[in-house]
Length: 190
Length: 319
Image: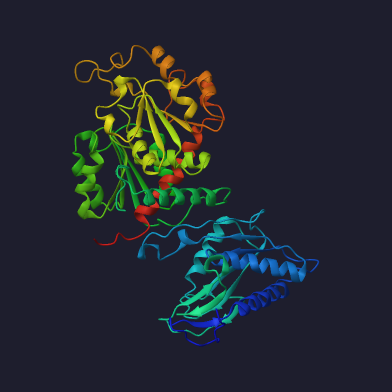
């Protein structure tokens, strides 16, 4: 498939915001930012764990951990945190299937937890994640890393690490595509 | 899904969704500091038990509480049921009082279906927690969850259900569910303890336990329900007319250590409880690692949480 020009709308009404190469570079940059901000490679470093929010936050957390290890030599544990049962909009739609929650060995107590998700929108998923996390233990601090921040927040929540800020209309949909689910990497606007 | 009344005709995809949810819940809740989810906050679940039961009632109560629902227990003694109020009036009272879900156990087959009909307009969900000799769908689901844990996928697995099939709602619900999930079920019982019409069930029938054991992936023993074996005038009880004696039943159909050796290495032993040790199952077998009886109870809570989630966590689409 010929590479598409970034920003161009293809016949399917899809506009590419990030190419596969952009996603890789963005993840690498976020890994550097996490190392810098948490000082996880310093002698008195906090114990950092990455918790991906399924579905696409989970592989993103694993990719970040690989990059962090590559750049700093520190193996950061990863886990997944399903927030479905904590959502405040469950009654509004059909039954949602649950995804796995898997804490890293040692849990989250007194560790610096970085929540990882693909898109930050209303902030309600992150609110649910904070509630879910509280039931699993008491982290020393919680930070948030998202690949795309598309705005339209409904709650006072902001991310500590943002791959790309994308101003959007409410009617638009931002899709993060990952090899693990979509056979290709990229971010598109539909 | 609005009610869970029966496993007859259950959509395998719906059953699998409940089992998957239960497995995920179990995995997510393991080792947690707080075993409580806010999912059903503000919802009210009422359990109405017209028959004695410890494990089923407690299991539903814990399941509801772990999902943050308000759980109210009603038993037939100490309530208007004991004063002779009809099931219909009890149901309408509970719905009017704001119950989102009624979990009912009743000695009459079909009681849960009647209840669901009466509550159709009230928007209240009904879960059948055992109706007479008819069905006990959540027991079948927790059995399937336990079997999936031990055996993996149930497609083409061979499962023997042994004992008092005639009086067993557990057996009926399991036959429907396990065959829907692709398993092959063999009923093993004396001819007197098999229901009329069993030839039309999607099962193999046998009277010889020893001959069936070597080919089974799991054996599910049933309780001999002496309280349902009326042998004389109405109300009189006794088991003399279904088999000669407990000893003879035990010799022919009890799972003892010698019989356990006939089973393949990987085979699992289930019993819905309460067990008659020494008759249906030898104590050493019940306590052996091959038996998954306490797993069944543990999984019961997660399966019932999953059922409540699927019934109550979303608004019912208006049909």
